[in-house]
Every structure is written in C-alpha cells, then in structure tokens.
Amino acid sequence: MPEDKHIYEMSSRWVKEKIVTIEIDRKETFQVATPRDFWPDGPSDVLSPEELFVASAISCYGVSLSGVSKSFHAEFSDFYITGVGTLQKVEHGWEFEQITLSAKIFVPTTSDKKKMAKAAERAHSFCIVANSMKCPVHLNCEIIVGPNLVTKSEGAESQRYSPSHIDNQA
Image (tube, rainbow, N blue to C red; front, top):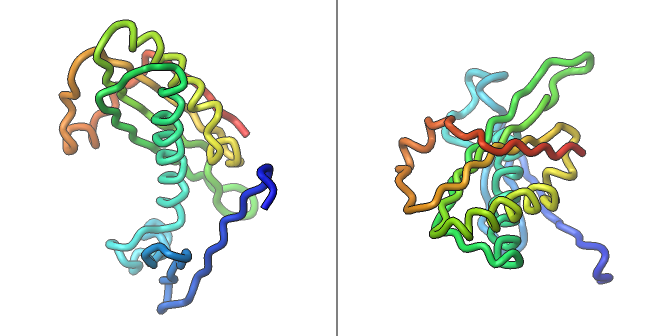
C-alpha cells in the first residue's frame, strides 16, 4: 500500500433493536447503541456513536501528545484529558456544534513546561481525527510542574483548565 494512504476497515452487525456491533479484524468486537438522550429505553451500559465520536477526539489528542512530546524532548509524568461534545439541532437533524478538550499535563521541570507547551499545541494541530471533524475542536491546556495530584474521580468532575486555549477547526 502506498505510504500516502491508509485504510481502516471494519464491519457492523445488527444485534437487536437499537444495538449493533463493531467488528475490527484482530480486535475485540464491541457493541454500540443509540444514546439515551434520543432513546430513553436504550441501554445505559453500551457506548453510543456520539460518545465514540468525542472519545475519538480525546484519544487522538492523547496519543498525538505522547508522540509529539518526544520530538520536542518534553518530559511528562502524566496527563489527564476530558472532553465535552455539544450537539445542536439543525435544519436536517442533529450535529456536533463543537468539542472542547481540556488537558492537564504534569511535567517534572520548568524547562519541560516550556517545551511541553509547544508540544501540546503541535499535537493539537496534528491530530488527524480533530482535523477530519466537521465541527471545531478546542483545546484548553494546563501544564503543571510537579506530580499528578488529580484522582480519577476528582479529575472527571474538574473543569479548572484554561491557561492555554487552542482551536483546531476543520
């Protein structure tokens, strides 16, 4: 295959009303269901396409940040990213108005903080998924010198990110 093209193949099968599978070769099959926002009787324990859409933006930024930070020689001890996707009703249905990613990146030194600020911006601008989305993807990024003091439960509710604001609009 040419190096300037990559193809991702997968399939989907009907399971039952409002639930399908996603099947990708050599990966575990998983189910996807309608969101409870639109179908209150939909399953609450199965991911929706809308959740996967926002998860794609978060995960692409995370793996991009991990890779790009190496090229900037920026060390991090941890990072935590949250994402909020906003749907809006439009003339022909619903669409994502925007996605906002908020990242807390923990670095060991002040020198790493400066390098990481550049790496964080570059990772956002290079994120394949965000660049492919119709809606804008915004990034709020806070880089902290010191150990990660955010617990999983605390981080999930925390929205105190804002020192840097970066936009990535397709």
